Amino acid sequence: MSGSLTIWCNAKFPEEAMAVLKAGVGLHRLLLPQTLHASNLAAGQADPLLKEADIALGQPDPSQVIALPNVRWVHLTTAGYTRYDTQAFRTAMGARGAKLTNSSMVYDEPCAEHVMAMLMAVCRRLPHCGAEQTISQAWHSAEHRRQSRLLESQTVLILGFGAIARRLVELLAPFKMNIIAVRRTVTGKEPVKTYPYTQLKELLGQADHVLNILPANAETEEMFNADMFGKMRHSAYFYNIGRGTTVDQIALQTVLETRRIAGAYLDVTEPEPLPPDHPLWRLPHCWITPHTAGGHEQEFHRLVGHFLGNLKRFEKGEELQDRVV
Image (cartoon, rainbow, N blue to C red):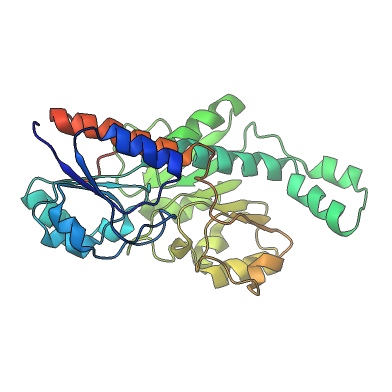
């Protein structure tokens, strides 16, 4: 693809990462709107400068993109794309041959490592011992030794099977765990036994660890409710690094208060930030990180690098990485 392109970007990258972006676009024109967003989780608003753009980088307003036939490619600075996962958006982009890509390749490794770290921590009872150090300074050696678990032969059930799940399976492989998954559409090419959503209830009773990596959409809204929690083993742990809206948090609070399940680890909640007076903060077997699973030291440099790599492919008419539409 020859000629200069106009690239609109509403992401407020750190100074060094922005310098890499400006140098990397070369002779292309870079447009920065008046309002930039430091958080890539912030939903961008309509911006008049987008009317001049061939490419949108960041989080453009989906309705405005639909209305602007000049926008030929949207590259999101997130792995999630809920706002763009509508029939209207897909139809509009498809009708003009436009593309939508996300940044899954930037976030699969840190998210997989994050949930892996917590899975290993709860098996070795690190959060439990940490709480005792803070509260009581008790020395319950025999109890913690007796309740510590080996990963080998335990069963992990993964909800959602995208880039994060695929990387997580690779990380878990050396530990000889039994890994199963559910996803919307089973291709048969998954590296572990994978089933459709419709079989989730019957699979829950097999799992020692239930890892929720589901995206937010109408189908997954509060998918994990009281009925689902009721199917889990009493000794099982629940993890959510997908989206807070996929979980009925009142039901989760209830099963934790009654010790219906062993515990929960949450990196995402509804709402975010979780209010300081929310009961989940105070439950002894609920551990919360503030939506940090995807974060890492080189996050913004990798976001810029991923976009620039795709920009070279776009210039050459090659297939883009992390293409959604």
